[in-house]
Length: 53
Ligand SMILES: [Zn+2]
Image (cartoon, rainbow, N blue to C red):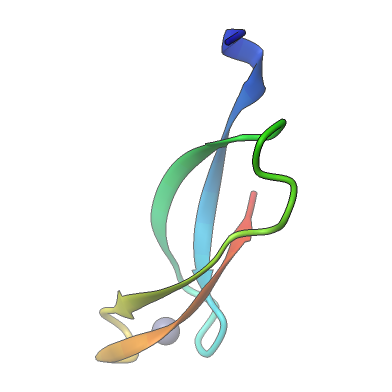
């Protein structure tokens, strides 16, 4: 697997728009945008977080 396949992304809360998590993904194997339920410290609850750069 080439190093270039992995890109850094951030996960942004869809409710308050905070960027709470940084992660990386393989752009070749993960074509869809990531959407994860994560705990948002600003909202104080689990919210949907979407991939952003
Ligand atoms: Zn939030």
